[in-house]
Image: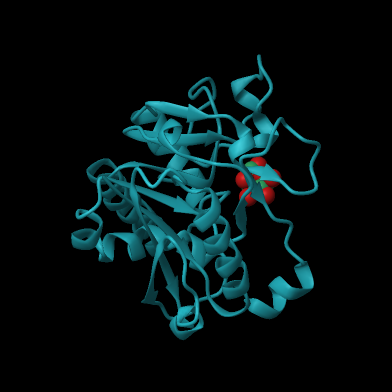
Length: 237
Ligand code: GAL
């Protein structure tokens, strides 16, 4: 079995992507039951030249664009390598500012996999308080009383063909809204959440797969979402 982890890291984010790669070499399918590739879209591909580890690292050239476009356009980027993605059994997106803190393996492998957003993970939450995009002109629009869970888009994936199909749909939704100068409330995350209402995830991972660094622990952390130094981020974008 072959699995690809996709990330996007331009400018200063490259250091975070390198740290993510190192953590994946330690914790991603450590039993070597699976061949894992790390595909990083970056404008600094040579930064990976000196890295070596258990996991194959494959940089893909990407011209930098400022946030939020760099995140919003991920489905355009990922669709552009559709033929490569189809060589994998499973494909996951992971934000470059994340670090694996514990082993991940077979428990994440399913057709459509999402992580519950740590901010909206408590039981019995009123769906009308979830931060879906409520603007009717949005292709990510979710009317009141629709939806059930809200997912964090920092880690998401599944079966390769499912992931590729999702990327195509979301790329079209995002392009259509961009043509009307509209970007959904939480960018790519809003579009992904709309998609998952129509295409229910087959596996919902707990928020410990997206634990914000400075938040109260939600349980034993699997994947840490590293706090950004906002001064650094502004320099990067
Ligand atoms: C924040 C997170 C954003 C977005 C938002 C949704 O905690 O930083 O990326 O997910 O929650 O309300």
